[in-house]
Every structure is written in C-alpha cells, then in structure tokens.
Image (cartoon, rainbow, N blue to C red):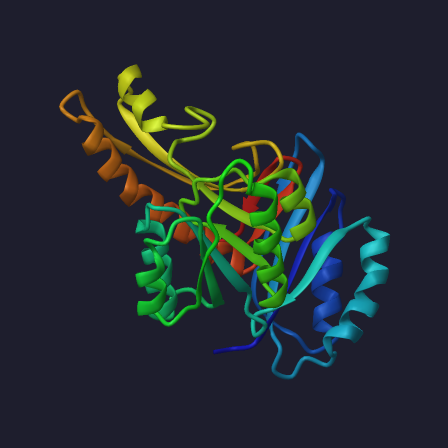
Length: 284
C-alpha cells in the first residue's frame, strides 16, 4: 500500500490558496495523488483535501508541519496533517443489537477498514461471542442509572489503556454523558436509526410507522453533547409502503444502519471528513 500524506484545510476563501498549497508540495518533490476542494459561498470558506505519495517527499512530518505553518498563518488556515500508514485505533461500543458490530468486525477482518480494533465494549454480554470469533478483547461493563458515572470511568480507563483515538457506537443504546465526551477528547461516531433530523431520540421506527412515512433512513454522525445533533457524515433511505409492519421496518432499517455506519467509519479513518460549524464535507 502506498504511504501517503494527507492535508485537510479550511480557511476564509480568497484567491491563491490552492496554488500556494500545490507549490509548497511541488517544491518539496511531492507527487500529488488526489486533490479536491470546495467553496462554501454562504460562509465565505474554502475547504481542501490533498493527498500525496511520501516516497521521495523531501520532508519528514515534523519538518513539513513547521514549514507549512507559515502558509497556514498567511491564509488563516485551520489545518491537519495526517499520514495513511498511522492507522486509527478504534473501540466499538455495542448493546444487544449486534448487526452493526458484526458488520464492522467482518469488514475489518476482510481488509476493507484500514484501522486497528483493539477492543469491544458492551453494556450487555451478548456480543462477546462475536468479538471472540474475530479475536478482539471484549469488556462487559453493565450500566444502570446509579452506576453510569462509574461505568463511564471504567470505559475511559480502557480507552486510555488501549490508546484509542476513535469510538464507534455500533448501536450502543446508551447516551454518552457530556463529561465522557469532553474527557475522551477524540471523535465519536454514532449511528441513529432514522433520517435525522426526523424522529430523533428513542424508538424512531415505531414513530415512523405511526406517522405513515414512505421512506425510512439511517444517519451516521459525530456524537456531541447535544443528543442526535452532531455533524452528519452519511445518510441513506429506503422506500417502504403501507404493507410494511414494524418488524419489516426494523429489518430494513438494520440493512441501512450497517451500510451508513460502515461508510462513515471508512471515510473518517481515510481522513476524508472535514468538520466545520455543524456540517461536514466528505471529500471523494
């Protein structure tokens, strides 16, 4: 696999940004493999992703960071420099519904998800068999109202021990506290079984059936302190009819949830998602 450097940028829109970035890389012998950009005219923002081959690149990453800082300051950039050969370490959180967990474990096992999965954490024990099947340590941390703070403390200790930098809530049916999100300090991806902002919160398929909708959906988004309000990464929908009962909606929804969550995780670990304001840009 080609080792690449990846630069993600957002800044006030003005002329010369793409030229300055390209010239910086060209003068240091970079072979650019992909470059994509987007202008948000309403906010006056320029957003860009550039990926280049590290073979023959004249700078180490520390040097590149120092030298690019001058360009970043000139254009008032918010920027991140990443590399493809430093995989994310991903913890999967799960409750009783295990379809998203199994899908992610399989995709990782087959090589589709280029990351490391050092552990699975469940607040119910049922998913342990799947973690064991794929050779991933499983930790059962039950949660009740009285034990939530202690349980989250145990989770955070495990995340630190295993050096996790991404949590994926694979149908983890617990609301993470504001304290947990703040202390973890890294991205958290959640899948919600509805096409947000419709039917946020609990039992969205029940409410969709009651409302008689003709489309159901699923949404993968970054978890924030505001429930189901985080920046959306991916969504998909499926048409239903009056013939579909609750079990039909649940089954069709499970298919949507797996696809939407796996895409979001793949794009995140590929450094293709740029968050700004309450939105995301997902670069091709």
